[in-house]
Every structure is written in C-alpha cells, then in structure tokens.
Length: 229
Image (cartoon, rainbow, N blue to C red; front, side, top):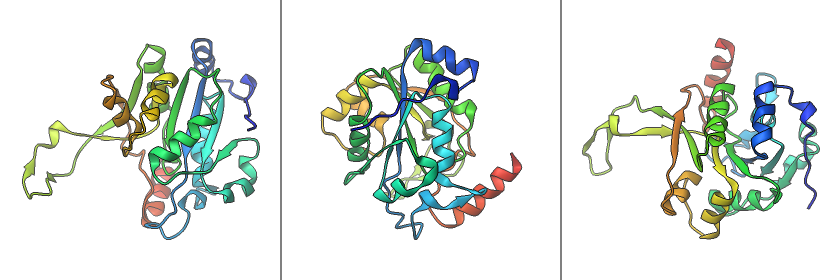
C-alpha cells in the first residue's frame, strides 16, 4: 500500500508546525456513504464551486501529515485527490474507519477522523481538537448545545441541557483508537468506542455551522452559510 506524506512546506501555518514538533498527526476522512438519503454521492456534490469532499480534505490537510480517504473507487478519478491514500469502505462506519486506520503508518502518533460530509468545518474547531491532543487528551470531540426540544421514543420529555450534539473531526491518540477498533465493536462514532474501553473523552467547543450534509436541501443551506462567511 502506497502512503503519501505531505511535506511540511505545504502547511505554512506556524501553529500547525508547533503541533508537528509534538506529534505526527494523520487524518482519516470517512466518505463511504452511498448517498441513499441524498439521492446520489453527496461527497461529489458541488458546493461553492468545489466538491464537498474537497473542502473536507483541505481542512484536514492543513494540520495533518497525511490523509486517508475511505470511500468508493470513483474517488480515484477525482483529479484534486491525486496523491492521497484511498481505501475501500466497510459494511458499517466503524468498519470503514478500521480500513482507514490500516493505511495510517506506524510512525503516526495521533489521528483525526472526519466526515467527508462536513465541508464547513472551521479552522477554530480543528485547532481546538488538535490543541487538546497536544495537551495530552486520548480522545477529543467537538460538541454543540442542543437547541431543539427533545423527546424520547417512549414519548417522554427529555432535559436537553443534559445533552450535546457531537461533530467531527474527532481526535485520538492513534494507539488508543486502534485498541478500541481491535475490540471489534460497532458504534455511530469513534468516541463511543473509546468510552467502551473505559477511557475519558474530552469535549471542546464545536460550531453550529459545522453541519453534516445528509439530504439534498442541505446543500442549499450550506451554500448560504458559506456566503455568510
């Protein structure tokens, strides 16, 4: 398997260079969804003149030594992704992340796991996650307050102040995340797997505009948010 290492010169940000002295950070971008709810592959949908996945890849490349994309072979034909590592997805999200981790080199110390469908992630969110890793956290997730009224499936009211919505990128010490995946558990996100090991998960402030594109109308919302920026 060919693994591409991006030269430091491609990432001039001084803060990122400081991170590099403390860790070797890689990113795994999960782009294996079939787009059943969107109606087509949302990863390749145009947003602001670029594909959704391009925004996500560039956000991770700014801070990462290398990037692994987990998705279908059609991504091999996307010109802007040349030189990145691509591996096939799995039957579940956890399986897909495991496939991505297998392509991360042994020299890496930490990893970010990001949804390809979150193209609007802000630099401040990414930096907050990385900073927590630098400070020694084993697992970090960005979260935002829940603003909708919540009810349980049993039709009972739920105190929304007790809950937060989880976003990506989620950051991990690589050996900890690999240990969690080797246990063979399946979860909707990787932080849940870490909790399954009994390890703490650190929360950092997310961003309400870091939306996940799921349905076709989400593209129009994302376009407006991008214009407002």
